[in-house]
Length: 315
Length: 193
Image (cartoon, rainbow over all chains, first blue to last red; front, side, top):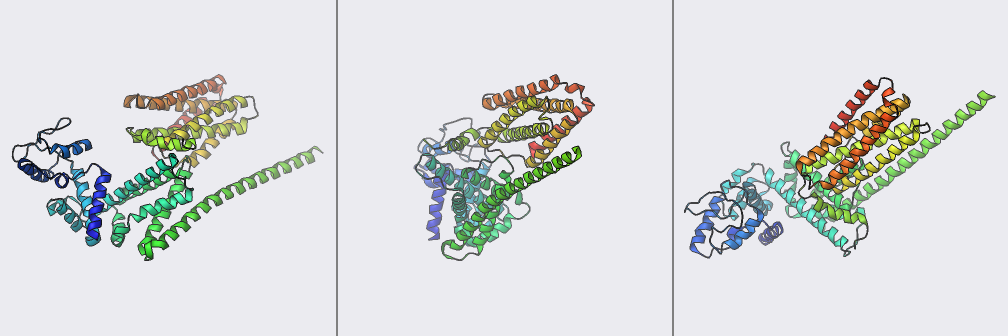
């Protein structure tokens, strides 16, 4: 069941990412010459190569039907492979790392966020397990990669929802419901990995990971508020994000401990926290208007007293 | 058609944000927003003291223009998804205190304060215009237009201040230097935090 879910997920990532097409698996070589080109590609990927544009990668899956030399665009590196033939597709080390990490996610429920999972992922791509040596031994990059992917998924989801509202096909949600749904959608992405997520959280809190994990967290929260329609340009900008960050983090922790069916307890907790936050906003406004009223009252009293003094002085 | 202009604005942000130099634009809008906010508070402080004097109407007029500037930067801030500076509450108080303080020293000192602040701001806008021109005048055409317009407005305020005997204020050069220094510090901080 896990394997099926894993391969579906992988297909989903690929479709959704668009660019990271795994050429070796999707475009089977039809020609013996191309077969060797494919094998060479696998070993070529281990080396550093200049950036290929994403459109180039899409062209490449068509290009395997033609001569490998045909390239749709621009200046290429003059790197030649073992048979003297030039490598037709190349990717940066970063793109390769992304592919390995994405493949590794499938093995996380079994191996945890570790180098073993990365090694397994590398194996499924036809690479040697030594590829896991590219990464930190504590699995940091794998976790950060996962978080980044989830955040991107969330942004896309929110963008879609916004489009539907603009087209009039959906109702605009009230703020509290919007926030609840967004946080729930984001947290649900953790469900397949929930067993090992506490481990991931503790790794994300390591000093050398904090800048990146904080960055990812703040940009996710900013995204959610942006799509919720926040247009504050004063200190509210900060208070809203701080409050939502608090809600997200506490709900995440509750989720770790939750054993209710489909995490009902967590979503109920979330609902309560969001309601609290809304109330807090109202209370703050009330406090402010009360404060202003008090100040006006005091000013009036001061004016009355000074008038009374003036009259007494005149008499 | 989608209901409400707000949702249209949100839709346009993705297009607006692609291909721009985000860190540079971020800084520019953040600091300009902080500047207009501060200028607003300075004029508010001056009005609180000198509102009923002879220079009241002219200060009110300049204040109204600053309010328009602030409104524009609020819009730009939302459109470009820029974070406002954390120091806003501080500039709120500091601006008011500066305005009220200079006004308490007299009408001419209030004008001197205006001259110093407006000079700082127009120099600052000029350097931003230079930066954007170096980057890509075409891409940032709208922003450049806005900043140029505002720079001209601030220059006008500066000249109004001079017309109303700012230079006759007691300790004019000391006051002016001190305020300009304060503005430089405020600009430095608002760009970053």
